[in-house]
Amino acid sequence: MSIQNWEDYLRKIFDNLTPGGHVELQDIDAFMKSDDGTLTEAYALSKWCNLLREAAVKLGRPYIPTKELKEIMGKVGFTNIVETRFKWPSNCWPKDKKYKELGAWNNENTNLVLESITFAPLTRGLNRTIEEVNVLLVDVRKELNDSNIHAYWPICSVYGRKPEV
Image 1 (spheres, rainbow, N blue to C red):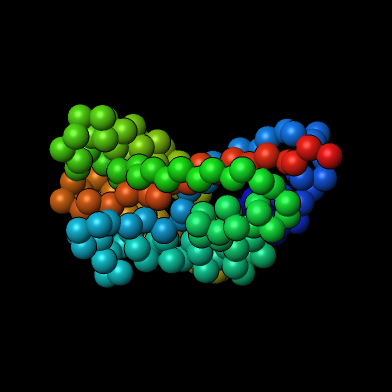
Image 2 (tube, rainbow, N blue to C red; image 1 turned 90 degrees about the vertical axis):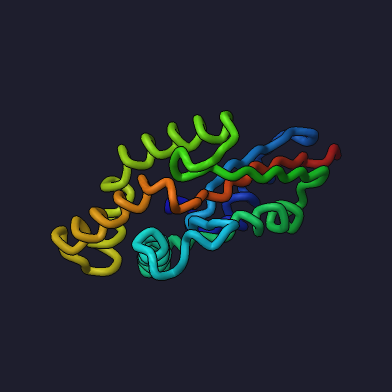
């Protein structure tokens, strides 16, 4: 929730970058997904993501879908733009060994920062009480750790080059 205006931010980078220089951005979509329907809008995880989005808008720092980063980079003048997308599983649900391990690490990291990324936006942006947020996070944590919910965060890595003069 730290970038208020991505186009302005990328324009400043572009303006201060040496011709021929590169910029790389890596960002996470704030909205968890599942490809098999095991995560629906009824889940606390989905509600949590939606509340964070709503709070970000009210705090003047709206999330943008990562799919927009490539377009914004082109709009401000970057060329040779390359976008790569990844999926970070929410826990150990994947069968593939690599993604199972990635899910384990992602789950641990998310559980460690859950309060720190939730309390300020929800209490300041949506006027929720600490008790209300704690109740929500009990269910979020439970679902985050449920390997029957095949959720993941879409991750985007995008880089581009400032043209030579």
